[in-house]
Image (cartoon, rainbow, N blue to C red):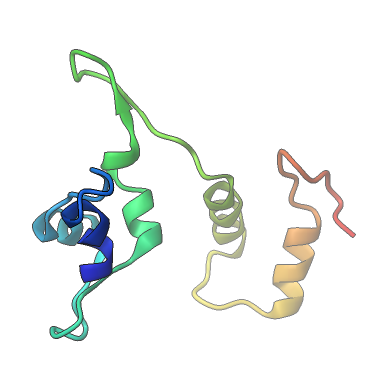
Length: 105
């Protein structure tokens, strides 16, 4: 957590000024070791602070991570807490994306 805040405190830039309470609400604060709290970067990056809102604050636009789209598709197809590597490989093979056409080789 200290590394997360260091550039802001040293006035290098004004990013990453979110308070621990906000990080906790995002599920981005790992307090497993109370002596060394840390930031869970993926949870932080997908938080509301990286969305752009309109002037009126009525709408906000967030970037969609294509990896999440692919993972959600796999999770829907599997619909179980565990799956065999063979099943996962079969599902990924026929999973198209914006950058890779199906079937994958």
